[in-house]
Image (tube, rainbow, N blue to C red; front, side):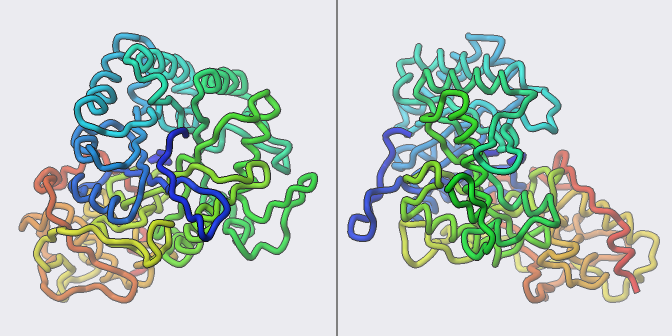
Length: 482
């Protein structure tokens, strides 16, 4: 999902022989790294193993992460970012160099079990206005050629994680076909994937259906409770995930590729940043999905076990929020590796296991002085600056901190900036407004976080957090003033 909103063969199989008919492949997860203070890769790999997670999907080929995955027994999908597609599309040598450095080297010397290369991430999103349409297929072809030349053509498969907006339907799944503006291109890509025994990877987000349409039936986004299922020529659809997935199946079938394997590259539910993004709904969706997945139940058109990667593993507080404030809250785990809620993902019956050995900064927070005047001219610009350079996505209507008063909102913004900047003294110097306290200002579901100690400490000091695209209107706070 950019951030994106970004999401086979020879899989490690977990058999529940006594409970199920047949076997299902272990669930995968997306491991994104757009965080100001990412957990050390070795900590994350241990957490993956402690939770029995057998597959991981990456959005690049970070050498530190790949090194940590050595001999872990975890299958890996490495990613190529969209901004590399042009170079790889126009140079066979560049593709060969990329494969040598990011695939061959890790397989041959490091024992990293790389199974897929994801070429691009949702490159045909309509919001990209065709930017990557001319480069995705050539890049895919060159990476495939490079894999073959490296002797990895059978071991490592190429794919392109695509958003579900590449296909559409008038009403029911059987109406499905590829989007008219990229129809021919999609057929070329699908043909290429088929010729190379490679899968079609699609990212499916029922949450976005609910987020984008206020009239969308809420229960249809989940896996139980919808009372008005859709009948498509005898195929019954009581949830939008199945309907979306099978719209793709029909699009493939109509164009002569009905047997092409499908990987669900991303599927999940966020926990904050929107009125429909909370712990309860995320647990309901993800457990509903996992219960079907563990049971080997597919969709009406593909009833067998499916291959899927949950989105995502850990919250990322440095992601673009252009699609919505929820973008930073997709994780099964918080930024510090603590589980958000309990869920059975198939490998354990007693829920998720937290990251171990995580070190935190001191128990202190930056808050609004009790003596500060809310009408002070410095309040609005200070809050705006803090939010532009930290993370205020838990503030607003329907969020975990949506019930804070004006002073609480300001304190939350100040503390977020203070923590992201590693609690340095200068990060709590909002003119005449802020003070450091050792009294936790958290209240109810609204948590004032303490940052973790990471190797990134200091990189984000003095407000230099890169290009966080946060747009938190100052009027939000003025509207809360008495």
